[in-house]
Structures are given as structure tokens and as C-alpha cells.
Length: 498
Image (cartoon, rainbow, N blue to C red; front, side):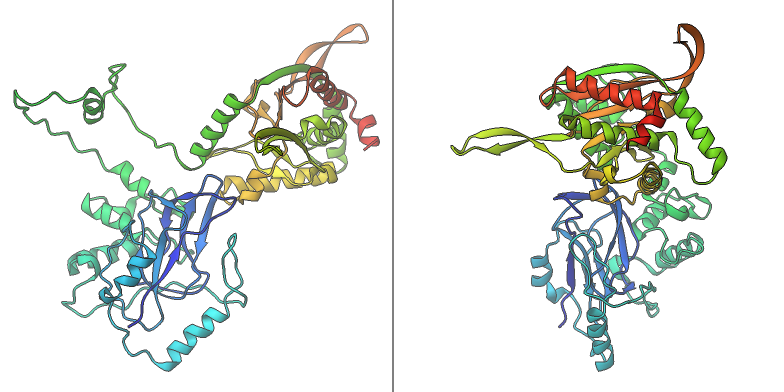
């Protein structure tokens, strides 16, 4: 009797303890190969596809889209190639299953149906010759296997389907599956749980536009169509205790404090949850101060325009030049390129240390559909303005696709925030904990400016520096800000010295 291989949700980077299951890319009964993506999960850092370390037939999916799964808990159970999963008897999405439970309940799985020696040997060879893909700590040793996804063989007429789904429901489900398959992306179909939800609520998936990648229909798309059922008002006996105000508020969708109707509820999770926790920690732990200055950026704008005229396709953006000035400023004022950590002294008590870095990982704020992300350009101090521009563009595209790695999102030592793209002049930004400083750049607009004693119209921007007052005083902060401002006003002379 063959037991299923239970794949546990791995640590997806930097000690993350949980991840939200966004979408299943396989279904119970599918045949999968080593390294085939089986699920999309969202961590506090990024959205990633999780590949399977096992080949075989999917027996159990341990979770539903939208559910938060703990690292180390079962994600998927896979029966070896040739094993019979028709009597698996394990409910899809059972979150409380554990590897031990799967092992002890092996009697619930059907006995292996005399697999051919060739099939068994193929399975062993497939595991040995994995593609070599590794996702932060797990994967297969090597090789070049090709992932594929196939539907399980159809059952004989009258056979009892898995999970008690009737033949009519199965036929309707297969029809929906065909109508909602995304062209050009073999595995990108809606999950069985989403199809079941749509069928139970009478939602026609054939005409539904999916919000996922390549038009993938997600659970949220179906939920948006389903109208909330009216709340039944039941008579309450005179002797019954009155319902709590909070419970009444939830049932009636009316806010108890304001008396206004509640138009929606959004769970704070994933990236939004991580950002909220980080900002709260920053405000509560860091005694921050803010300094700012208006800067005449006319020379920088004109210099870039001249470069663009000479080479229209390979000219760095203004942000790349400013990033270069920021990196140079951090070399002159290294106090702002540090971090405060708590350690243990010789007596066993807690003590704080200011840790300085040999190099600069420059983070920059990027607005995405999933919230504010701060990827970082690693070793930015070793890059030219043109190289910084290329890396900023690459990282911006990566985070907006939700594919940034934890290392790309959590390794910054100082942050540059270009909020001028939103049409604003200034902002007292919140420091990206555990960093100690963040420089904001406002929009560049025409303003009256005094040049050589005469009034002129110049390109002016505002720089705002928020810093941790524990690591430096106003002199160092002001010196750094003035250095960057002078570099923007006289870019030619500064770049010549870099």
C-alpha cells in the first residue's frame, strides 16, 4: 500500500511564518511532474509560484484560495506514479491535516494498483533528474524536466466521484472548465473550489472577466458577482438576552459608532499587513526628525535634455541621477547609512549598537496594485547613473508583477522616495524600519527664483529628509541634504568628481 507524499509549505524567505494561498494551479486527480508550479501564494514580501518537489497524482489540496497557511503545514499531498487515488477519501482543503495524520490514515487510501515496473522506474528517474529549480531552500537536484499538467482519466459511468460530486455536477464542472480555460496558458484555469462556488451560486463563468494573470478567474471575481443574501430577521423571545452591539452591527452591515451602512470589508493581510506593521513599528520606535530644502533643478533638467538629444534611447532618468547623488552623499555622511540593533552585553543585559555598512543598498518606493513596495538596488554605490536607471526600471517592473524576491524587498539600507510622480511637493515620510533615513523628492515645477540678484523662472523641486535622531544630529542630516541639493543644482561638477 502506497502512502501519499505530503509537501509542507516551505519558508519562502527570511523567516516568514505564513503565506496566503491565492490560487491553485492544479486540481485533485491531476498528474504533475517535478518542479511543476502547483499554487500561487502571497507572502508579506511578494507573490510567488510554488513548484512541487514530487511527481505523481494530486490526492489532496490542503487549503482554499484566500486562506492563510502556516509555514510547515501541509500544502499538497501527491500519490506516486501508478498509485490509485480513487479512494483517497481526504477532503479537499482540509487545513488541519498533518504529515503524521496522513501517514496514520494510510488505510484510507486505496492500495497501489500493481503499477508496471516501467512506470515505477520512470517515477524514480524523474525524481533523480529534476530540473534543478530551487525556491529559497528546497527544490530538485538537477536535470531539465519539463512540467506538464493533464486531467485525470474519466471515470466509468456510475462511478462515485471524489468528494461526493454527482455525475451531473462533474459534467457541468468540466463544461465550465472548458469555457474558462485561458488560451495560451495551459495550466491557468480557475480552481475547482472557485468553480464549485460559482455553480452553487448560479454564476456564469463563461462571460466573467478574470482579474488574475492572463485573465485567470479568481475567487474574488466570483464573490464580486454574488450578491449578499438578505439577513433573515428572526423574532427574539422576550426572555432572551439582547444581542451585543458589535454582533448586531455585523449582522445588519451598519456601523455602530457612526450609524452609516458598511459598503465593504477588506482583510488586512499579505503585503498590506506587512506595510502596516512596519510603519507602526517605525512610528513607535524611531524618534524621527524632518528637514527640507527647495532646490533649483534647472541645470539637472537641462543636462539630461542635452544627453537625451544626443542619445534618445540610452539616457538615464532624473531619478537615477538623484539616486547617484544620494549614494555619494551617504559616503560623505555614513551616519545615515546605518541601522540600530539590540544585542546582549557581557553581563547578559540588553544594549543597542549602531551598525555601519560597507556599501549602500538603495531602496526606492514603488506604488503597485498590491500596495507600496520598497525594492532595493544592491551595491548601488558601485553603479553609474545609467546602471542605476536600468536596475530601477527592472525592479519596478518586477514588483508590479508581484515577482520580487524577499532579498530584493528587504535588504535596503536607505530609501529614496519620489512622491513627485503623484503631483505633490513635499511629504514628511515615515522611515522604512529598520533603516534610519528616507529622502523624499517632490515634483519639479516652474517657480520664481532669484538668480544673480534677478528674478527668473526656474525648475524647482523640494527635498525632504526624515532621519532617526538617535544615529545623527541636525548637523549631519543638514549636511547630507545640502550635499544632495548642491549636486542637483550643479550636476556637472559633482558628476566629474564621481
